[in-house]
Image (tube, rainbow, N blue to C red; front, side, top):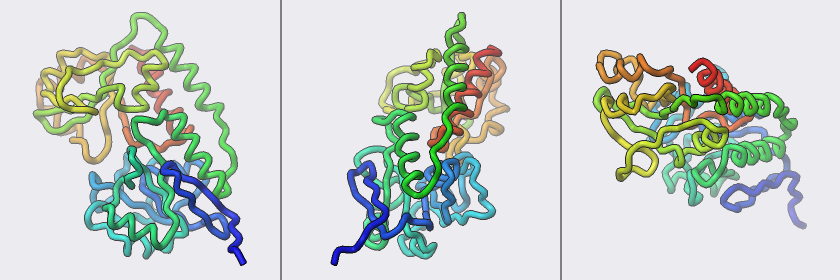
Amino acid sequence: MMEKTAWRFSDDRGQLSTAAAPPSRVVAYIQAGATLWDLGIRPVALFGSFHDGPDPDLAKSGALPLDEVGYLGAGADLGAETLLGAGPELVVAVSYGGGQVYGLDPETAKHLEEQVPVVVLDVGQARTPAQVRGRFADLARSLGAAPQDTAELAAAEARLRAAAARAPRPRVLALSAASPDQVHLARPRAWPELRDLAAYGVDLIEPGEDAGANWSTTGWREAAELRPAIVLADVRSNAAPLEVLRPDPSWRALESGARVLAWNPESPCSARAHAAFLRLVAEALEGA
């Protein structure tokens, strides 16, 4: 007799996961967990990436109640036994292309998949934010969440288009602070949310050509010479805190001539989180 399956989901690797009932105990990569929380699914535990430390990155956690949802760790110290110890019925991870499970050692991911269904959703360059939102929404609905109202996102998109259409168009620079001496300048085409901003009409600065595929690494003086009106600054824990840059005259020159906004390249992939980011940029454009 064939086992009856009440839950089926095919992830972005084309791998089908099944269960006799929709899984209720979900362990997730922190960005995925924050997204599911926004969509009405409560994870039981979270894990980080090799960029993260023993504590959860608050920039990636969104609205998650971290005092209620356990954090299992990150990087080389995170093994399959630790993940399985949380008793998951489903593990939700992300990939940046090629099906590689982000944040887990390949052997850990392999051992994990031998024990429990693992759903991997692609958040890489090949996907638009709308596509990623759609896939997470599909997963959340399969787990019992109600459909989401997208009116808030539609309003934020309309506001941003109107703000970006005003002349003169303020120039926007996205960056991640490396140290008091170096900064990574984002290549807009390499980041889905930045490509989205450009599609809405935002004038994003393209840094100079060098070996970096996603970033152009340079000094703060060179960044200040680009004279942006708005700076999107990476606020993840692996970026240098902006407070340590304040004594540097080049950073002060950059900051004095621009409005600095928080940018999270690993924000929750939900309509609510994306709408908040678009409103933030729209407000800065309106006031520039």
